[in-house]
Length: 338
Image (cartoon, rainbow, N blue to C red; front, side, top):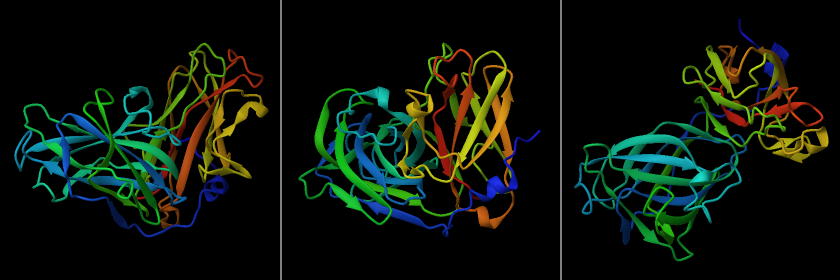
């Protein structure tokens, strides 16, 4: 049975829409320095568009003398910090990074943009640390990557929707020596429009429950909100005893009334918990164990395309020690689309 918000609640999710447009925000391709793979380039990405962006890929500057020659296969793994995080001070701190996308490409000549089509991921408005790790695939030669030493004047690039502040390089995946400042040679390719995407962000809280922090993630199948389709959320680390929870839908991840998000819920009886979305719409549901799939359906209505949306669950738990007897999940956020 579908657990579906009311029609009125769904109408709350209608925001202004824009036509899908793919944009490339480039840094530079002048090289001058390079690092062998495996290694990472790190920088901060600030999404200026209040409705967020879908990153669809990257361009990179391959250095083809240290590993494989021109025409070699390589991989790029993309990592993010939580929103509000930064690469600064975290270049060798793997605990703050989450891998969000992977892509495979074939190296072109140095100084030429090599396109890397990664799995799409959504970025709500705000700032993030971002890292691109260059990986040699099994049995392959891989590539090294070229970058440029930073001099202050060459370390920021922006358009009306995205800003990049660069940066560092590291000889490992958040391990090994850190080289600073270093300017990633390449580009971020993104869309501000109507393609569907969804991802996991922010942090949840246990509320003092011995079960720990509940989780909310897009399902592997139908985990993004596509028009005319089912939409699945996976909840995990729930209390083993059957109980109830509330899934909250918000039309923004920026403000709850006059308060900037996330909001500290201590004044509402949930100390140590954060609200990542406003409660614009909500659905109560029952769970019967430590995991639950929440399923809803989206209308096949063009007016919904491009809507930015966030979701978070409040889990009722008698074992929690706060006055509300509840815990909260992390944020999941994205965009309804095709």
